[in-house]
Image 1 (cartoon, rainbow, N blue to C red):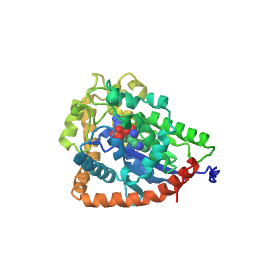
Image 2: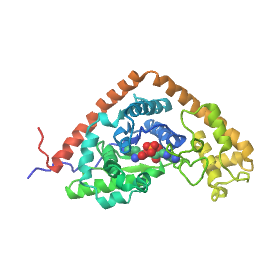
Image 3: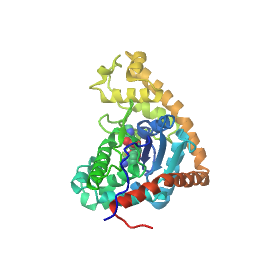
Length: 345
Ligand code: AMP
Ligand code: TRP
């Protein structure tokens, strides 16, 4: 019988982990739902690790050259948005092999029935699920490993990732139960703010997404000021003026979305925005939103373009990040192997 290591301590260091797929193009949804909050959490009393999840990206086909480009561009987007490689550990997933190694163990902990309930799998696999990759089905087990290989306690994400984070807790709980340990923490999702679900500019019932066939439905982080202004001007709305309280937005998804975006970009609550714009028409509000969006996003896209001219610098940051990350992941994976009963030198 292998000895169970001493894992009775249940005090976990506050640690933040989150990831984004380098599958091409960052949207305002990614920025407000995720990256902007990654930046603010690095100012708090947390250790922060942010990841380009390239292994997740290949669960659907990626052209290899484009994947390299997109991974660097996402890193540039993180840095340009204010994630500092001095304050946070910035990595691409494949350079920290412990993610995939713990991912395998979690493939053996997670149950088929749990995976079959995942709405992101159903959406991405579409009608032809038989032709989806096995990786796409197992995706959430690798995501759980991304988080738990750091013993991360907090994960900032958009609303669409909530189900995956519940599954992460299920995997941690089943591992702890089956191996009679309390080795993995119960991670807390951090889904907060006015823009946890930014909607399409063309259809207030659909999430803003980089995979939407209509480019007018989203604001890309690399859009020019003119394009941003045009897309906001053309955003779908209703004929009414703006209400003076949040309650008045309940049945007006398009209006609510634009107000949420304004609130998140200007770091105000929805009610604060409505105090200023209640009673105004979209003819007044949309240009104000366009100006705000351009003012916040253009410095980021300019800086991204500058960083993309120095790919070697980006690669160096990621290599250093991987080294720092492995100081955390190697000992945690070793302990996990011991718990499971793997011989190692
Ligand atoms: P993805 O691009 O699917 O890898 O998503 C990366 C992060 O951005 C995740 O935390 C998502 O929850 C978040 N995100 C993506 N789209 C949106 C959206 N429309 N609104 C809010 N958050 C989003
Ligand atoms: N599944 C996330 C998405 O599609 C990306 C992701 C992978 C992630 N691993 C993660 C997010 C770990 C948070 C933590 O957006």
